[in-house]
Image (cartoon, rainbow, N blue to C red; front, top):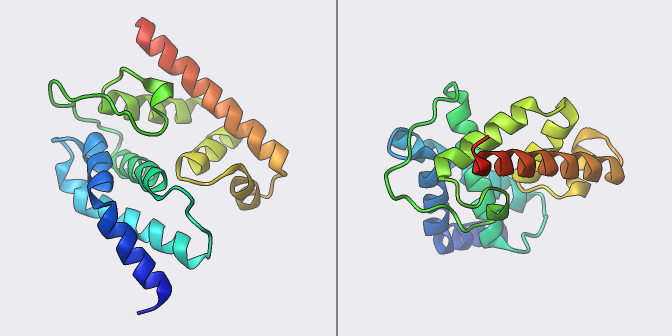
Length: 172
């Protein structure tokens, strides 16, 4: 087995519970049948990242973020029909929780999906890349933008997300 394969297996084994937890938060009981597909896509994203030679500085945060955004994308492909969270299900304390603190996981996923749909195309692309685990330099390279343009689009998208989360909390 190669060093990359060993690293992949070690990361998956070490953080399997974190990935599963993030996936369950989005899929919930109404989309539980998607969990194996989402897990496979998260593993594929991790494998691609390792094969590219890019180091993962904070593996638990990276895997949590990739698991959430991958689960959201898979549910969206079904037509965006989000099921209700189980009663009493706690809000996430993971990465990005400051944007939507106090919302149920399904509400958070719906908020992100709706915000991404309403953003200008460039901001939506940049924010999707950022939520998928890319930094501003990687987003810039992906779309052929300068780093400052990528940063601008990411910050604009995050600001829109924060504004929508604030409006949701106020009940607007």
